[in-house]
Image (cartoon, rainbow, N blue to C red; front, side, top):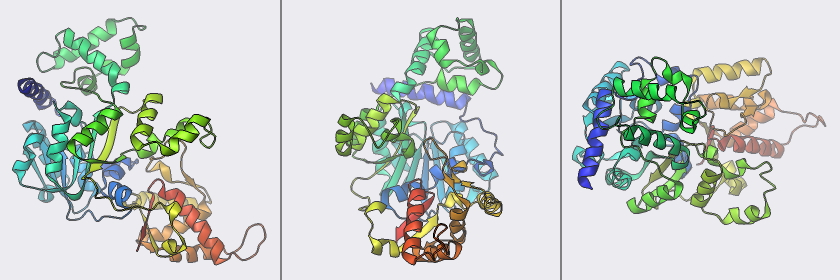
Length: 445
């Protein structure tokens, strides 16, 4: 078994040595993207707030990018977490070299370091990490549990891990494609342009109605520049897939605690039903008592749209005892402090908001961070005006209520002055809706 695992890792190393992933130009920056979702996901504020309902300061934190590849995710981590130290490891020396060059090009040379190292050898670095990012790697390891255990051994108390596994329900057709080309002998050695060409030739030759072709192939794969897509889907060495029960079993064996799915709003089971408030009786009675594992497993069985089981986890029993906003009393709210999520503190977002206010147009906040599962998140311009002070920093809840009174002094129907109690309730309801998506972060102080 050990020899089989070593052989598999060597094949993976060879593939990424000859074709580092992802093939993103050195000069490209995640800050240039209109969609800030990648920065939002990789900002430590997001998972730490989900777990502890507290805003963490990234400066001074030590972040590991395990399986850093060509370094683009390392760059995202650096951009999303100003002042944090980025440490990257990869089994491919060529990938490590590219990562080092990328971070240097973007000005992070002094706050980053990269090593050619296996995940199982992490303790050799002699470092402890506040956050570990292992993206698109865990499912390639011979034993994902051993990988999680290695992460745990170098994770600081209170630290978090983000990693993922391929979803066997969504991925099975590509596993069949990989098995097809394995039987044809195309993955015995490291796949090259020759093997990529043979995949293209084979898929083009198949009738359009053949299931493997109809479910996996797109004509665009036959054009120049799509070699990476073919390598990562049809010729990927060591690819394996798992289900939700497998994911939770691995966490249990590694003695780690599940925190949240990374795109948690896209895993909401009740969103799959036409009338979430009027579920079939069996579900209406059973869901309130269902575990998070059971809910996620049922979602995946009903609607397996996610290629990755992408999740956060950490040491067990270290989450702050949370009380949901719906359980807060008046005193809790009166002592609350409100912040804008750091990734919305972007000049482009504020300019768009100001333009909406000037022209009395609704502000589509989910255009920048589309964490909502389906429908866009729209904020009416008169309500969006209350967000402006948040660009200056955290604001006491009652300061926002007083501002609301100035911008909404009269009831539009009765024309009676709005009471502070009414303003307080309106602001609370408005902020609660935005906090669901972590567009605003609400802490007790």
